[in-house]
Image 1 (cartoon, protein in one colour):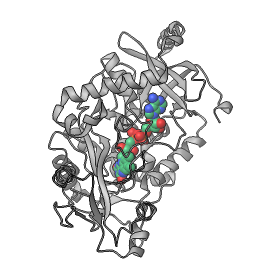
Image 2 (cartoon, protein in one colour):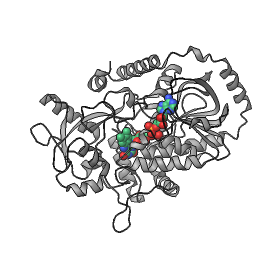
Image 3 (cartoon, protein in one colour):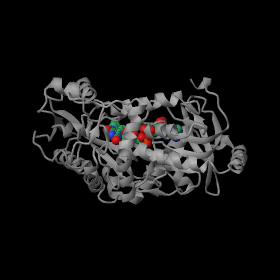
Image 4 (cartoon, protein in one colour):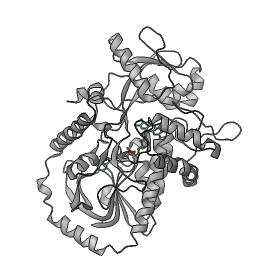
Length: 453
Ligand SMILES: Cc1cc2nc3c(=O)[nH]c(=O)nc-3n(C[C@H](O)[C@H](O)[C@H](O)COP(=O)(O)OP(=O)(O)OC[C@H]3O[C@@H](n4cnc5c(N)ncnc54)[C@H](O)[C@@H]3O)c2cc1C
């Protein structure tokens, strides 16, 4: 499909990544800005698409302090308070906007939104679309993006470098993801990184394999400030399977609605609604104690029919592995799931490099602190993408001809043949990021990354 895409050499904005953050950012840009979106894979293949549980929203002003406290407590009070406030304050408006774009959330028999709950939330404040909330939101945003004349989408295009001079970013170097691996450059007034997290670097992960921390490797190369790159969330319950590849997530909302965890002896060993890090550690201890690589989850409080209606996707995935979630003990194991840290960014996505912005999971804007509260990440991706678009639109009013001239000169001097082949780059990138994680937190590295080599 890229054959039909008409490309220019220069854009007002380049967005790298087509998940919820990248798409919502592009839609939030004024339509007089030319926007190029690139993604390593097909547009739908982002972690945003996989989100199951839902998206948090402030239902009524009365809940503000409680929602704030739940987020701070989950984050071990290492969150940036201002970022948390902005996220919660903006959430009703953001929800209204995506509903206007066409997103639908489940309602109860009275026609009211069916708010659900996940670990560490005091009340039910999560909107969902069955158990495929990410697909509903992301596909709707993708559909709206495709309608916009000012947005060009380039799929299977991998950002492999930035065009940088004197700590200013002027564009990107890319490589096609086919056998040819053709390389080219694009210049832009602003480059927005929405490349997601680092799951692709881990053996056990719920993430897409191609979401593999590319922006962080470049940040390390160019000394762009990172923050808490070792704050990595391990999801306690992913479907255990002998098959290789992405681990299927058994969402927290399953535990929120009554599922329990059992050890090898069939006994409960943890309060299932404690924060993820606490539950994941408890599971790891059980696995070490019993010499196994999994524990079990089961949902005794629902019938199979009820479960299939409420969690169709999860129920089906368990069935495919031969288990009925309501009748059987389903083996589960922890896996890498989410990165709370990332490229240090302001509320408007600014990084320590001029013209370079970070949003979504790539950014560390301080919302999550040391640990993410469930269902805050889709919301965070949307809220700060919008603030970033507003800032870039404001800045665009400044004259940018000089920027464009420097960018073009820089692009013309890059020797594209000097980049190592993909396999070599992949190994170098993994080593760079894993070494940084080990340097920041050896204990975490030894617990969860030591098999990474
Ligand atoms: C299984 C699962 C379930 C989840 N459930 C929930 C939930 O219920 N609620 C919630 O709030 N959050 C949930 N999350 C987390 C949430 O989905 C993500 O944190 C969030 O959507 C991140 O969005 P993003 O746009 O920042 O990145 P992503 O959606 O990961 O998108 C990254 C994009 O960057 C592209 N990309 C990466 N590297 C490059 C490169 N070098 N060049 C070009 N393109 C590149 C990818 O192709 C992709 O398009 C879940 C995550 C997973 C994996």
